[in-house]
Image (cartoon, rainbow, N blue to C red):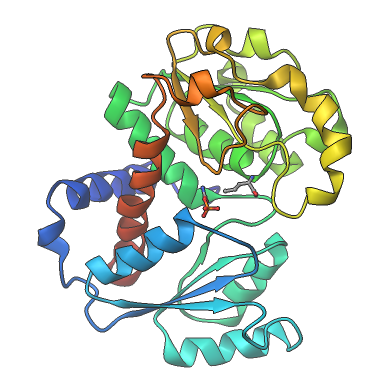
Amino acid sequence: MLEWTPEQILGILDLAARMKKVPGNFKNALLGKTLLMVFEKASTRTRLSFEVGMTQLGGHAIFLGRGQSHLAKADLADEAKCMERYVDLIMARVYDHSTIQTFSASVNIPVINALCDRFHPCQILADLLTIQEKLGELSGRKLAYLGDGNNVCNSLIVGCLKMGMRVSVAVPDHRDYRPDSEVLVFARDFGDRFELIYDADRAVQDADVVYTDTWVSMGDEAEKATRLPFFLPFQVTKERLGRAIFMHCLPAYRGLEVTDEVIDCEQSVVFDEAENRLHVQKAVMHRLLLG
Ligand code: CP
Ligand code: NVA
């Protein structure tokens, strides 16, 4: 997401929208192609959307869990170099961003980040498509993100700012819960289109979209008890939602980052957002393999 131009991102959104509208036009586009899906962490939406997406495009997807392969103990670059002899495309969900970088540096086929400790770019492409569908033109819209300055928050800042949106992020005033420092440097160039504050009520003012994510990401489970008191003031409530649409990458922890009333209300678009993972994943694979 940091490397892509706004035109490249818009191109993916446009292709995803066309695939969603007439899936049959792309039925055998990736016939004979194989996607390898490497997972160090759990997943519902990412695994299903990539695997189903590949099936719908006429290709094949292989799931490789860390525990069922040699990845946990072997040299990662060696394993990656073998993988590329069999498959056309790799997607990986990993703990450390450096693992994605090692994959990418070791092979000559495309590598997709399907979530790491720092980023979740595929999610944000689906989010942008959803905002476009619900609100039209992205440019000028305001997204307020409340909660943890995590992987989803980092990629949202990058994706939304590149699309001309305004982004207000409200996080606890604690150095461990702020967005990534590289992302904050990136955001600095966007002037008053970006703000990082510690006040949830202020962040949601005039927001078109209110977005949140779990307060305890995968890998942070041991910190749950320490984290919760810092995040309780950042819950998305009906009052904070106002007239905005509500978004969440899911899985959501009801009663923590969001109330039942919000996630179940008419303004909540979380299931359309989840569906759009499929259309966007297909567009990303199509673009990476066919140009
Ligand atoms: N939003 C998302 O990435 O969901 P999964 O963890 O279920 O893949
Ligand atoms: N921030 C969450 C996103 C899950 C899709 C995590 O990393 O666990």
